[in-house]
Image 1 (cartoon, rainbow, N blue to C red):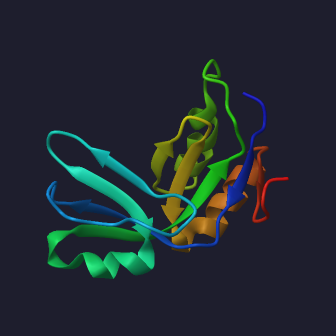
Image 2: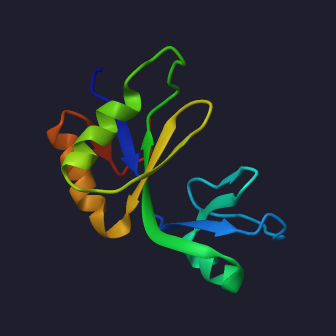
Length: 132
């Protein structure tokens, strides 16, 4: 796998497990997500919104998002392995998401600088600027 370009977003995010019947509007942040299975409903939202979820939610965070510069071709292999291995070696836990065009890695906000360093040291580029 060749070196990848990533953007570390400044916004703080939360990951929450909410009841399947919860009436929610998810807004803000560089990424919003909802994943529903037969057993649970997980959402990614702005950390400041997480306090509005109340007792109905189990919330983790704050996180910062690392966005892989895309679009990534579906035939590529090893993208997440190339990124998650150095993070695992640095002892950084992750929450990953994929969109049609790219991959996102959420890292604990307090570990964002360490994650950036680990990725750079493994040959990747990490910027805080918008992709050109």
